[in-house]
Structures are given as C-alpha cells and as structure tokens.
Image (cartoon, rainbow, N blue to C red; front, side, top):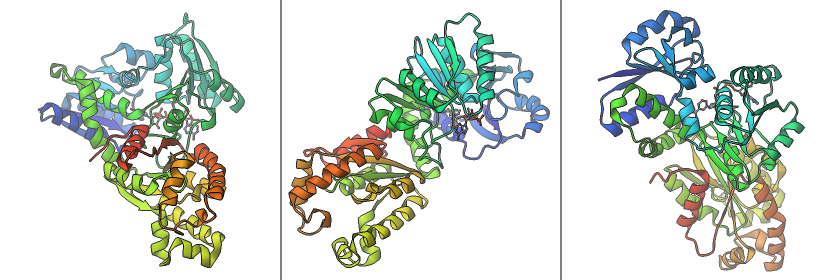
Length: 455
Ligand code: NAP
C-alpha cells in the first residue's frame, strides 16, 4: 500500500481526496491520499520528512513555487512555467496541471489567445499557449504590474517566439481583443461559487468563433461557459482539467497501472458532480413564457440531478392560501409582483442545490434580474414558437393564467414583448419542442449545462 498526500494552505473543500480515492477504487488498489494543511512558514521544516514518508505528493497554493529549491529535478513543463503540483518519490517535480489544460484540445497553434488574469493558472496557460505556437497572446489583468511581469517572463523564456505578446489595459481594449480572439482563457476566479452570477467578460461580447476554457469548476458549468455555448461557441470547463491532472499524477507515482485516462475521467464525473452540487449549492432557474413546460421539465431535471425541485407559483399559492388568479384579483398585479419578488429572493438565496421554475413575469423586471444575478443561480430559458405555446395554454384550465385572459391576440403581443428579455437574460436557451416529452427537454438542458444524468 502506497501513501500520497496533498500539501497546501488552506485545504478546506479540496476535491483531491475524492478524486484520488475514485481512481484507487476504479483500478482496485488500496493506496491512501491525505490532506496536509501546511502554513508557508512550516514548509522548509516539514517537506524533507514528508518526502520520506510519502511515495508521492501533490502541491497546491501557496507552495507551488516555494517547493522548487527542495526538488532534485524538474520536468520540462514544470521548468517552463516555474511551478510544481506533483512530486515523485525521487524528489523530481512535475506540473500535471499542464496535462489537464492541454487535454482540452484547444486550438492554441496559430490562435489569437486572450488570457484573463496573471496568477498561477494564468501563468501556466500563458506559457503553454506560447510554447504551443500561438499567433498572439493578449493579457488582461486588473493589476497592471502583474500583467507586465508575466509578459517579461514570457519574453525571457521565449526570446525567438513569433507570438505577439501584448497587454490590453482598458475595458475598451479588452472588448477589441475579444472580438478578434479565437481562444479565451479565464485565469481569474470570477464566476466561482459563491459568486456564480459573475462572468469575467460582458457575456454580450462572446461570439460563435470563440473557443473558451474556464478552469473554474464550481459551479460546473460557469456562466462564462453557458453564455459561450448560447452564442454558438465551444466551451470547456475546469472539472476535466482537475480530474486529468490527478490521473496524470497517479501515472507518475504508479507507472505500472497503465491508466485509461478517458475511461477514468468519465467514471469519476458523476460522484464529483454529486459532491459539488451538495458542497457548493446552486440554483438552476428555468424561465420562459407560459406553456413552455418549466414545471414539467424542472421536475424531471431535478430528478436526473438528484436535487430538489421548487415551482415558485406553487409556493406562492401555498403560502398565500389562495390561487394566483385570486391574488391578481384581490391585490392587483403590482401586489402579486411584490410578493413574487420577495419569495423568489428567499428561495434563490436559501441553502441547497435546487431546480426552480419561475412564473413568466419574474425575469421581466430589471430589479428581479439584478436580484437573480446576486445569487448562485444559473438561468436556463425554455423557448418555443408562439403557436406551440398557445396550443398548450388554450387547452389548459380556463382562467388559470391571468395574463392570458385577453385571448390569443393579446397573449401573442405579450409573448413578443417578453421573449427578447428571456433570450438576452438567460445563460442558456433550450427549445421546448412540441413533440418532445419533458424528459427529452430535460436531457437537452443537461447537455447544455454539460452535466451528467445522476439517476
Ligand atoms: P491566483 O494565483 O490567485 O490568480 C488569480 C488571478 O485572478 C489574479 O491575476 C487576480 O488578480 C485575478 N483576479 C482575482 N479576483 C479577480 C476579480 N474579482 N476580478 C478580476 N480579476 C481577478 O489563482 P489561480 O491559482 O491562478 O486560480 C484561478 C482560478 O483557476 C481559481 O478560481 C481556480 O478555481 C481555478 N483553478 C482550476 C484548476 C483546475 O484544475 N480546474 C486548477 C487551478 C486553478 P490580482 O493579482 O489583481 O488579484
């Protein structure tokens, strides 16, 4: 039995033990993986002993560069980016984050790369992009001195590279670079739980010719990924990188195992997704016009993800003890909207991952959209032509939808008023086809989110 460990500080919420245990289970070995929380001032005193006790170590923030003086040698990738995340028994340092990053198959060769941030992950992605033969690399970072330092170290490491390396120093320059970029790499934590409503660039600037890589994996997916897919671009998330760097570390420590990386990564994904939905809860909010199937699809979607489902309209009726048409009649639409906003905020802010279906009017109001963005919520719109929706609305119980009481003409006018709002506000849109069952539409939502079915 071999012993491995991760050194870092702080280490709360690390997924590494779960991933390495899943690898051990999948290949049927009894090795162990510990977490060792090591403050920076403890590193020099404890590292030599830990290298004797453990057959292999992973290293994370803040030790990735600090361990370098203690190592017997460096792999090419670790030398290139000056950071180590894996140490072998013989004391040699490796950087398997590069393996995880490159496994996405991004079109780096000849690409025009826009890189956000200048921290550890950004640095690794910058070095690998230039080494791969990018045509240009533009850095955008809120701390100008850090961007300049990264440019200087790239120029020193690749003195004869044909890659044009520059800094975008204003939001306008960022916008211009994004337009001409073929690859966007996020090296910032923007969009990470508990701020899943964040996106490191204005989503409206994303375009269909863009391939995006976002190393952030909680939530899976991020808003950046969903908005890229919504625009028709290709988007890769960070969970694959996280899993593949771990498998690559095991390949260094246990070369005799001959690990099948793709099969292992696929096998580990459901357990990881379950863990993330439980440990870093998010809401998946379904929006759309009446009749788009939010409640029916939401129920199946929640079931497939093994999380709860909430129908906001049902909650409003239960808590008020009256039906929505009666609420409209007694307190008026404005009274109803006030209660609806308040209830939506409470539900979207409460603990636990859930699928939530909203009434068609909720996202129409700017204040509600702002409120939704300030919670850990990803927004999926269910879209359909008006003819499909009217067929469903007109065959439902008479008077159950106050906003359709005016008949087909006024309901269609409302549809054309609301649909552009749903489409621009949502992070991802799925067509709720007339001949699709709720299960089929829920499957399309899962595909868009890049999440596996867990049931
Ligand atoms: P880091 O070294 O702390 O660097 C973070 C960078 O983002 C810095 O340039 C920082 O700028 C910038 N930044 C931070 N907050 C920002 C904000 N609100 N707006 C704009 N820029 C901001 O972190 P890291 O280790 O590179 O990690 C970055 C992200 O990658 C993390 O969120 C992590 O989840 C993810 N990651 C994923 C994997 C994986 O396997 N999938 C592995 C490693 C990291 P300043 O210097 O100005 O603060």
